[in-house]
Each structure stands twice: as structure tokens, then as C-alpha cells.
Amino acid sequence: MLQMIKQNWLSNIRGDVLAGLVVALALIPEAIAFSIIAGVDPKVGLYASFCIAVVTAFVGGRPGMISAATGAMALLMVTLVKSHGLEYLFAASLLCGVFQIAAGYLKLGSLMRFVSRSVVTGFVNALAILIFMAQLPELTNVTWHVYAMTAVGLGIIYLFPYVPKLGKLLPSPLVCILLMTGVAIYFGLDIRTVGDMGQLPDTLPVFLWPQVPLTLETLTIIFPYSAALAVVGLLESMMTATIVDDMTDTTSDKNRECKGQGVANIASSLIGGMAGCAMIGQSVINVKSGGRTRLSCLIAGVVLLLMVVFLSDWVSKIPMAALVAVMIMVSIGTFNWDSLRKLKHYPLSTNIVMVVTVVVVVATHNLAYGVLAGVLLAAMFFANKVGHYLHISSELNDASDERLYQVVGQVFFTSADKFTAAFDFKEALHKVIIDLSRAHFWDITAVAALDKVVIKFRREGAVVEVLGLNEASATIVDHFGVHDKPAAIDQLMEH
Image 1 (tube, helix red, strand yellow):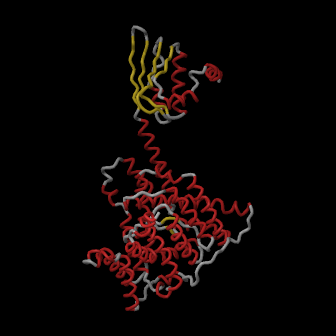
Image 2 (image 1 turned 45 degrees about the vertical axis):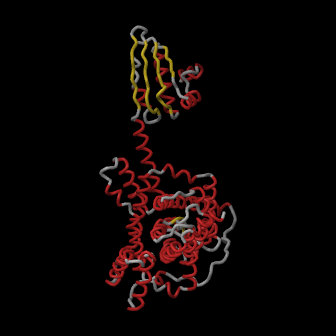
Image 3 (image 1 turned 60 degrees about the horizontal axis):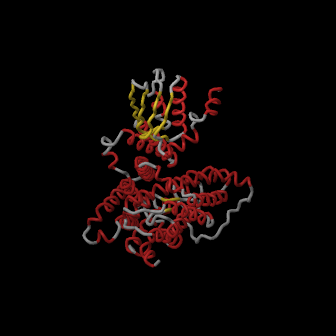
């Protein structure tokens, strides 16, 4: 027990504390921005980010991953807030948490194994583009000071790590934020700051039960929103967990993460916050700043709340240009540049899946649509590819007027037509032997194809013998096949 606590909380104290500070600073403007997107008060997003970060630090399944209020979730809340108000948003967030806990117990986190590497790469690249695009409003119609501050900030972020000794002690994004804030205050620069984005809360959150009638009508209103929030939240969280797994060469418990996200969203809704999920941008900042354990996520959440409540005067003076520089660094670091370099080497199908995922996510700003499109495309390409691995050869025995067909490969819905077309039903034969010892039948389409072949040969007067079915294929053929069931064949003939 003590060893586990040490491993999860105390094995990287300095790195986690510093990384948590950087993440907390980067969370503030994003939480405010996402609140504005959802059409709610900035404190709703800030309270949510604090609560979700702290709760997932304890109950989440991926140490070092940052969860908070996110843009993907905020976009789904707009209509509900406009139509029914804030209290219904809290109720929907609570129900979303219940759905996510249920998903964890149903082990739906394991479904991530069906998401191909090309879909994950497309998802990552799309998020990198979206993170960069989100910074553009801060870089349009502004004075030259903003561009200069952003450029200097990027210079600090990328060059500070090369400073002897000091460069490895402090994370460069934190140095960038502190130095740029100092410069802006010292020179009195008239540029946009965190305080210009919205009023920061001045009190700690309190327990709030959603003030909605507990009726079936309320359930019908919030159910579709809660379901959508749960799906998008889990998708983004599972994808982010996979990416952090790769960055840190460690594994995570996806089903525990589902439950953790659910508990965090329930807790958030009960203190006046909105639903959230894992954030790839902040998670990348955390990992690149040295954060590795649960402590970094806890520090990020606690420091965020302390800063916006007790140090709001100072936090409000942080120039947005400094945070834009940090987020541009995140987008550059998040984008998988290797995927562009290897476009010529990867199969066309892999590249198409990756590009379609990117295009759909960027076009719709909905991660679920992009991932769904990518997974469906990948499945279609895979099924088509495997369907080609089917070879049928035959050998005629003139003496006994028999033909032996040998089937090698996979028979299922994409290869069933190819299987049927390989047999010559017009050939006058006494006996047909179909050897399936090196074949596998996967679905009822394959079984129907076998029935069709056997019945057609029998109509032509040939004796048909099917042999060599493996145990799994035999089970599905026995269950759904009709060629060896006289009553079923007679019924089939009548129709």
C-alpha cells in the first residue's frame, strides 16, 4: 500500500508540482473560454476544472493526465443552456457522470482496442489543428505588441531548456508566463489579459443540488444531452489516455478512467460546474513540463482554485499572448509530424483513414464524429482486405467422377460472393467434396453461401460431402446452416 502511494504520488514531487503550476495557469483562460462557448458564467467552467482535476487525481485510471472543462463538451451544452437554463445543465452533467460510471462497469473502455493507430493519429493531428485555430482570435486585429510578446514567449519556451543548469530545473512554459506577465506589467502594455475574458470567481464553491423537477419530462429533456456528453467525454478521455500512454511508455486502466470521469462529473455538477473530460492540450503540457504522477493533476486543480479565488488580481494581469505562446507550443508538440513524413510509405487505406478523421473533426469540431468516421472507414478497409485472402482450388478424379474443392482463407460477408463464384455447378459430377480444413466461417452470410453451394450441387444430382470444418466454424454452420437439415431444405424449396 505504502509502495503504491509512493509510486503514484511521491515519486516525482518537484516535476509534478512545477508541471501542476503550469497547467493551472493554462487552464484558467481555457476554462473561461469554454464557459463562454457554453453560454454560462466563467465560474461554472473554473469550478468544473478545479473539481474534475482534483477528483480524477484520486479516482482516475491514468496518472499524469489532466481532466477539466473542455471545448468538445461545451459545444454540446449550448442548446440545452439556451433552451432550459443552467440548472438543467447541472442535471445533465450529473446524469452524464452516471452513464460514464456504468460504462466503466460494463468495461466499455476496452473498446479502445477497436480504434486503429491511423484513427488515433488523425485524432491527435485534428486536435493539434483545433488547438492552434482556437488561438487565432487572440492574434487577429491586435497591435504589434501581441505578436512580439507571442514570438518572445515561443522563444523562451523553446530556448530556455538549453540554459545551463537552470533550464532543467524550471519548466519553460512557466518561465514564459511569469516573464511575459512581468514585462507587460512593467511596461504597462495595453494588451488583452486573462481578466478581459470574464469575471473571476471570488468565493469557494458550495454544494448545489440541481434545482429541476424530478419528473419524467426532465429526464426526456436531459437524456439526449447526457448521453452525447458521456460518449464524447469518454472518447476524448480514452484517446488522450492512449496518447499519454505512448508519451510516457506506461499503461493505464481505461475502465477505471471511465468510472473516474463519471465520479468527477457528478461531483462537478454538485458544486455548480459543468461536465468535462480529459484534455489533450493540458495533458501534453503536463507531461512535457515533467508531470508524471497523480500529484500533478491534484496540484493543477488546487492551485487553479486558489489562484482564481485568492490571487485573482494577479492572475487577471497575465497577458493572453503568453498563454497563446504556450498553446501554440502544445499544438506543435501534439501534431504527429512523423505521420506526414511517412505518407509515402504507409498504405493508401491508412492515409485515407487518418486524413478523413482529421477533416471530419476539424470541419465539425466534434471529436466523436471524426473518430466514428475513422473507425468505420478502417473497419471497411480491413474487411475488404481480409476478404481477398480466400483461395479455392479444385482437382478432378476422372475414375470416380469426383471433384475435390479445397478452400483456404476467411469466409464472411465480403468474401461470400467470391466463395460461391468459385464453384462450377454446371459440371456433370457424381460426387463433390468440399474440404474446409484450412478455412474459417465467420458469420451467417458465410453459412448462407455454403448452403447455396451445397444445395445447388444437389439440385444438379451430385452427392456433396463437406469435411474439415474447425470447431468454431462447425458450431455456426450447425446452428444456422440448412444444407444438412432435410426439413429446412424442403421449407426453403417451397419458398
